[in-house]
Image (cartoon, rainbow, N blue to C red; front, top):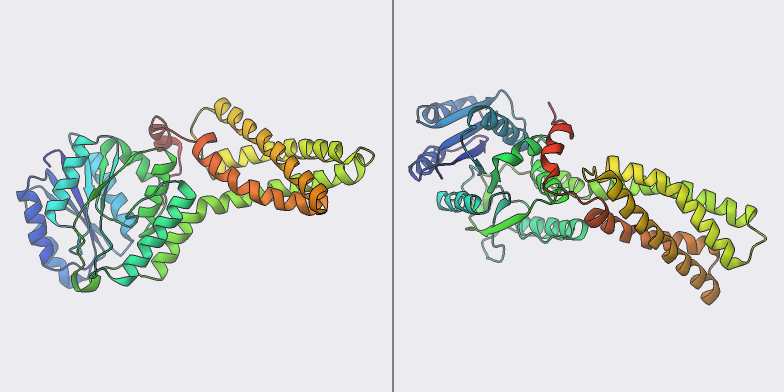
Length: 370
């Protein structure tokens, strides 16, 4: 604990926060950074008490800016003032995270350096609010489908983060609760390892102290979850227009005199070569934002392309010859199926980043919102 700072973003806290911070300091926390995210003026006395504590810093937003912004405010302050510490543990102020569990996460961070520590709750208990159960189950399922990793608790606010990862996390967009899911998405894309640590499942008064808006914040989280696939879909639609347009031109006109098999094969080959160049550029730069080796990713991409071309050829000719589906219709159906498979392969193989790219992404990635 003496090598880590505890970060607590708060909005309209109760007096229990003072005792909570005191317990963390007594347990050996090196520093506590509390971010007052636009709390009511009548609660100023709570923050005044906190400021009087040794090793407790209170940062203040003049208005509510959201949990994501509060976390980034604390990350930035930590990097500028506590270079001798090894990392941070983020915790919520609504009573969900016991100081014992905060200590457990800090200890795990010391033993699992380089990994993102997640304090995960057990949602099988009868005292778990229905909205929390459904929300976590749903986001965990979507995360597993799109990013190939099963997380038991995607919405946990109790996280242990090494200092080396903070510049990278400062570059991630998101101002409110969606920032936390975005953190998981970008960490997975950068191939950072997750370590899930079981913690107590605590809901006081059915989570009445939480400022999470079930509808608005859930929509934002869902959009962030599928944003990668949406961007991929935009790129593939534009590439598909190029691909199908050139295929129709070749198959229906320029190569009309060739036998069906040859006509489909050459039309598929040429149209995919044209669209793939455009698609590679879009996917590398905008969809997966790859930081891996350019030549290596290009080689992998075109290996995948040739496999997709051959699979497309087999599907189209088989559909046409076996059951009489028109070539153009078969082409569209085949490409929808292969497009979904291609997304997963590109995410997990072609444009897969590694931890060496984290520092690079920190300096050249998206600038965090101001």
